[in-house]
Length: 195
Image 1 (cartoon, rainbow, N blue to C red):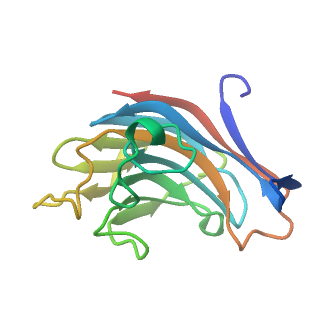
Image 2: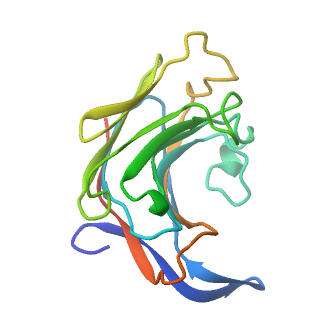
């Protein structure tokens, strides 16, 4: 945290934990607040670097996840049946392209429920990533411009596990194609607002 901005730093450094050595470190932050429906606005700046994979996303509170905060009290449903909402994802190899996606039984592995667009300066300027989620549909936008609407007509367990609480997660993953000259870069989050 610097000047009120949360920074999730991906860094090239050797790290060993429980006998496993990795060449990069980063973080995944899971919130302890779950809710159903609302408008979520996140003002964020993406990191630089081929092989970086930042995401601002949500998981169903019922997920069965070893060590997860919600697992002991709510963990009854595996992924993807718990539902996943990717508010925004960014691939360093496609510098100014951002995307949103839904993972559920109808769309995982080879994801079909997705949309995105190119924006200017994804990693040098803050942008406002928004999800407007209600009982009928989800609308994803960047800086007020909609790039994807998810609106299945016949909602069922296959395509709409989104009538139950979800919680926010933020992370920067490192992909196998990480650039050899990558040293460090941060995803920066100025604010998160839930209405």
